[in-house]
Image (cartoon, rainbow, N blue to C red; front, side, top):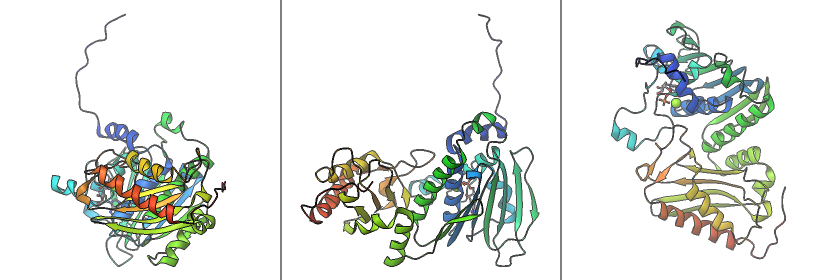
Length: 349
Ligand code: ADP
Ligand code: MG
């Protein structure tokens, strides 16, 4: 074999660097929706609308009524490692916002045609618009009317990365992933009003409200009335840990573990320790191969949990995992044991 000629080291062109980084956070339309909605949540929005065309492959638009972005900051919002959320290592250690890496908009705009319109002002005539098409050009800022808040429109995802575009599945499959992402996000914040539209049709319209009836209405809208009717509501506090939410009785078990939502400080989390504690708690009441349905919220001091484990932030690391595990297990085990002892299990699906 011929020896390759020695290549000199060079710094990657920023667009290419962003496209490489995009591989980590932007897998499909659902990941774009997640990142844009997390930004809307971090901006203090009270109402978030998600609109899609063709499962999100043609268009994704997220509109919010949050803080908006100042005109001077607009080009920065699209650059890598630019964030308004942390400025120091201390900030990182106590981070409460969903984002903080300053990577999402840079990554998304490197693999799509992205338009962002924002307004920090109450006057709806004072908005600004910035467009980036695969980051070919320096972003240009022009005036555009918009109510206070931000709208981000992402068109033609992966139009300039054909290899990635090939990995997109059918419209139905991609839409399914988006709806699942939307469900998790809407379950994470009852105090925010949500709308999901697909191909001009309104799929979900969820009013805001932290009172029990409105919370339950949202649970029923997103997970089905039958889950709510067969779920235990719990709310327990031990020391600095609080666990609340709904756990399905064994009568409402499923063949797949596809309706399990666990939030740590408002962030949806997949964690082996948490999964293990819940499985153990259900072990005696569920047939082998059946999976419980639950929507659970764990609230802990942000200083005892590390969220900076992975770019998609699905994982967390607890400082005292043992204590969290025991708290989860004992809370659920007791709640399930107290609920209608002796009831026979009948599959719901
Ligand atoms: P991160 O969320 O990690 O800070 P992003 O690339 O997602 O990085 O966003 C970059 C910055 O753009 C954010 O820090 C924030 O200042 C601003 N931004 C993005 N989306 C919004 C939004 N919907 N409302 C207000 N500001 C936003
Ligand atoms: Mg973000």
